[in-house]
Length: 289
Image (cartoon, rainbow, N blue to C red; front, side):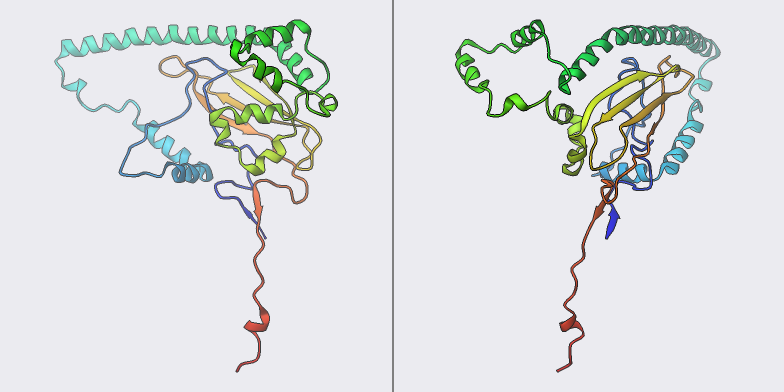
């Protein structure tokens, strides 16, 4: 029988909107993800809590709403201060507002700078994709630059030359097989998410691209070769940031939306198929003795 894999929902288009970016990039080093500092009470099972929140988005919204109602609520301390001190505190708030305005301008300029250089990076990404997928070969200059970067110590050169001997049949290999799966497994935070079952589909990844939105936000595009898991040629996940900057002028992460995966029959990786052993009917229903 088929049943949903623990901590994953089969009825929610993957990836789920509740999955937040693993890092703040690519929108500025100061972009914030939604989060509340955890309260440690004895041994708290974070994995279990994350599972509960992931499967109950309305619960997350309710908690965020309650926290939002607490923002700005006075503790009574400032009101207890002498009038001249309260005026100074108000003055500091005014100064902080000016700082926040400048910070917002700074973040906007950083974003525009990121977009400017992303346009310069794009041709390199396209060239990388051609090499990875066997559509083109790197130039001799590029190969030489890469070899210089990876140059080993003199004592290791002989061993390196031995390892670099071409394997039998290597001439028939196009591009760099499983390049993106290897890259993802070498990124610690991503490696922890990838299961053995996921690897089967991720082996068909041919490219991962990124594009900026017109408003604060970005989209990741995952290109796949023809495979036995799903019919999508490209899967996207879009990350949206709030239109209004945060108190400190930072971009505030809002939510993410992912494509619906069109799974082929019996290949849905969000469910596990389990077979239950048939009881021995001869023993269960056999003649009584």
